[in-house]
Image 1 (tube, one colour):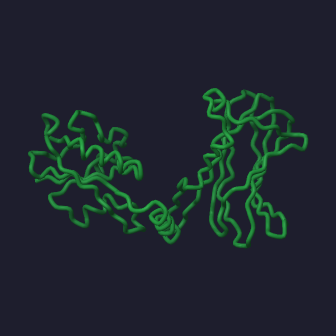
Image 2 (cartoon, rainbow, N blue to C red):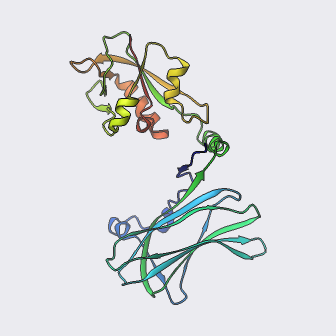
Image 3 (cartoon, helix red, strand yellow):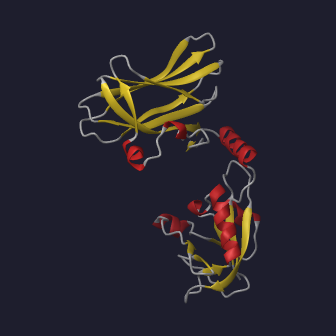
Length: 273
């Protein structure tokens, strides 16, 4: 069975040069004039022969107006082909609305891709958070994603292994990891009950076997596993299920998390006796 994975890739458009850093303006969004022939056009850095979804937030104080989003392919001869058009009502409450173009597969012919925003009513509008998401719908595409990520980002740790075999640490339902100074680093507090019962927020073993390492693999379709191994330096609770790690290892964990948030995937292993 194919699985569908949508990841916001490096194409997420920060557009820092087009947005004022003043806090009030950021909250309001970037103004633009639409309607009466006025439109918003932006070239999107899409690749040919790939699948993407496009979304942005938009608001206005105008009443009962609608927005049209059009994704176009502009060929090298300047011929324009519309790939997708969607229409969105903004209501009359002045709140932010998420406008979305669902998954579109780009043609393989040469050219560029342009997003066009138009409105039924003339006036001032505000936009923010324009994002492009690449969609991966098959194993081959999934492998391509991780290959590209490793090629551009370099290697990174995919999970944490805490070696506590020299301590009297026991298996538990809610183990936690603390720094030596007492900072909570990991507790799996957002894990659902099903995950806690079926998989646990931590995997346990006495040796780092290939089967245990599957827990911290980045994807079942891509065989990249890179454990960050640290030593537990103490037992942190009366139940003996939680541990302390050193401040140096705490720094290593936090630095690794900048590249890849393995805690969010519960990619944690405790080695215990």
